[in-house]
Amino acid sequence: MLDILLIAILAIIVGANDAANVFGSAIGSKMLKFRVAITFFIIFIIIGAVINAKYPSGVYKDLLINYPNLGDIFLIILPVIIITFIALGLRIPSSISQSIIFSILGFSIAKNMSVNYDLLIDLISFWIATPIVAVILSIVFCFLINFIIKISRLNVFQIDYQVRLSLILLSCVAAFALGSNLTASIVGIYSPFLSLSIDFSGYQVLIGEKKLYFFGSLLIGLGALILSQKIAQSVGSQISKIKPVSALSILLTQIVILLSFSSDLLINQINSLLPLNMFAMPLSASHITFASIIGVASFNKFREVKPNHSLKILISWFTIPILVAFLSYLFALNF
Amino acid sequence: MLKNHQKELIDSINVFLDNILNINKLFKELLKNYFNQEFDKVETITNEISKLESQCDKLRRQVERKIYQETLIPDLRGDVLGMLENIDKIPGQIQANAHSFNTEKPNIPKELNENFLNLYNDASECISLLVDGARNFFINKKITLEKCLLVSKIESKADVISTALKKNIFSDSKNGLATKVHLRYFVDIMDEVANLSEDVADRLIISSSKN
Image 1: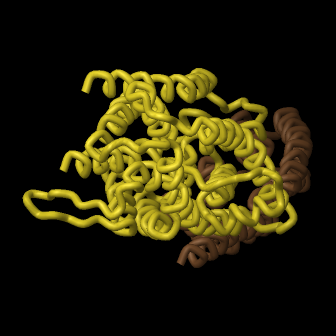
Image 2 (image 1 turned 180 degrees about the vertical axis):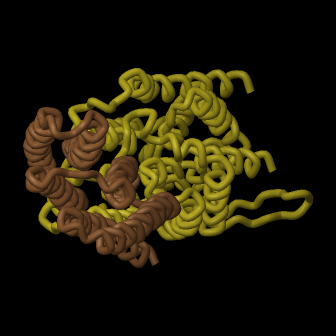
């Protein structure tokens, strides 16, 4: 019961936090209305979770050589919830997947459990690389879209129509890509216990893999519906002003990166072409969004970037994982 | 559905700009008729101008409402609304000028007729260039910049004519001060059309450079 409650809280926080990553730029640039955006978000996040979430979820299972007992999982999730709440209060978007991985690290150090450090180093390397790739990709996409608009010789209303339509379609694809990633972040930690049998008010509820991903993503959608409106409207505006074309570039960047790390089919294709040895893993949509916004802001020579808030977010990329690991270490020692 | 709204909007803006050009043409006709002392025709044209001006107001409001209701062109919305509101002052000014000619019937000396016509020709050219610039604001901002920069040049020419006209009016000893002031008022209101066009063009230059 406690596990379900923790997953629900985490999913709602994630929904509030991450719906903004997908639709925030479109809502913030006033191209999409919140209700329309959130409806699409809920539908596609569920589809994405049910189809793809099993791939990035596997990382949690592989990270610890001896996985903790089901009863101890809440000691890993609780520090994540506490730190994410604080970060949300400070209006800093945080990465749930990274927080959980570092919480597992803190927990395993306290409990003297063996950690697959090779995998951890690989994860950290990709986490460092993805924002850099996001900056580059968003610049490339911004340049490409502006070029297409220039050669298409459309009037502003036609451009507006095309951009709006593309934003709706791409937001759905981004929600699909994020569905697997986010759901893996919040329920993936339970993936070794599938099928899960949970005592629910005296009834034994059997939760299989698909059901787990479905309910996880549904709760994320609920969190988005209830709590994400303000965050979505202020996404970007806190870092830099977002124009509709920039919103499109940000979305394309998110889709390419998130799908490249969640779909087994794509990963195999990329690995066959490039010597990257990529594997499915939960990534930080918040970091990718932030990096993409910085990338598109470079088009305006960073004139509209708010340096204080951007710096705060950058610092949080290092402090949040350390704080979560430390808190988790303390919890594991004392409970 | 979205596409229909956008088509309607483009059509409305085009009709709005066409109406301004028509008002401009009608006022030229009005002046010619006035100098030929065909006052019935002047009245008819004044009424036509009034009708078109009301249509312009209606169209502007319709476009503004649609842009906000459908949250269209969010990054250009402010500039487009500012442009439409400022351009809409021009038909308003022309309508007021037409009414002034129709009701006050200024006693313009024949030798000044051509100067008055020249003054309005320049003002009229300013309007045509501005409308061209405004139309291109939605398609090609380079052309908007070119056209709007030309408006300033033509407006300066209109200023030269209006100053010369005022000198002529006040140096004419046949007319009393009341007539002179009355004629100067008509020079001012005709020159105002060119001034308004220049103001709108200046704003369009900023909007085009910004975007």
